[in-house]
Length: 309
Image (cartoon, rainbow, N blue to C red; front, side, top):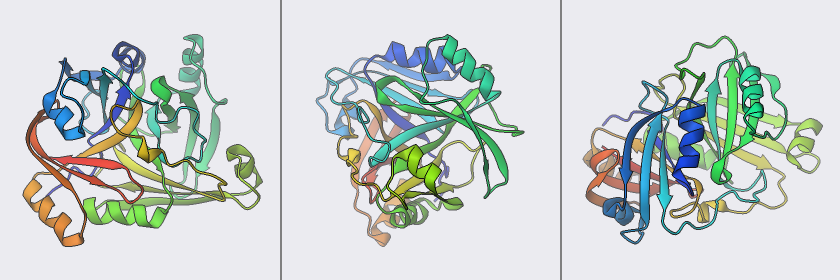
């Protein structure tokens, strides 16, 4: 059994498809791989929705890339935005990380276009990889949180506009080790970065009590240009964390869940049984990704993952 070893695609519920595509296609330069208009009975069946609840879908990616894709889905009767009014420490899917070239210039361009940021960009060093990074956060459509990062000096596949992704899906989890073990045992991902960030500046930035901080783990497999990685974050000392995994399911809006691919669902199903992972199985679905049966599983924190051939 072989996995792509990167997140194949990330599902994002959108209130208005045109708004989402204007940002990701017109501004960021991603390309449309596939579109479907109208109801999708098979996807509705997979997600437990009424057969006409889905109104349209678009699958997009960085040009020439087939991992880290975004699967936008528009619903007839959308529910809550997953991260609307969320605290930065709330549990659940949190950030969509994209990389870019000449970030300060991109930042100024986006400001001119009317976009807002949570702060000005910052420079820092990732000690684990000795990399110098520039980063900034921008609120996106449907209460998504978009993180722009430039790894200085890196050569990476980007769009003509200088953007690429999704490099990482960032999720906030209650138990970092348990969540990491799940991805490592099920998908064979390896830990490449482990950082503990503590101190008064971290407490002030996040709003944590004295002694609080964050711990993160970056998991990846045989990556293509860093795309499709899993980044797990645990906030130490957070007073209250709303569990937004419980509402991160269709027809909610914002970042919902992700997909992986394997070349043998039969072998994957046997592996799930061997390691005791519960799953749901749907046969012979005709989806925007192609025709495949699907295993649906949930991480210990509650993130849904659909696995297909």
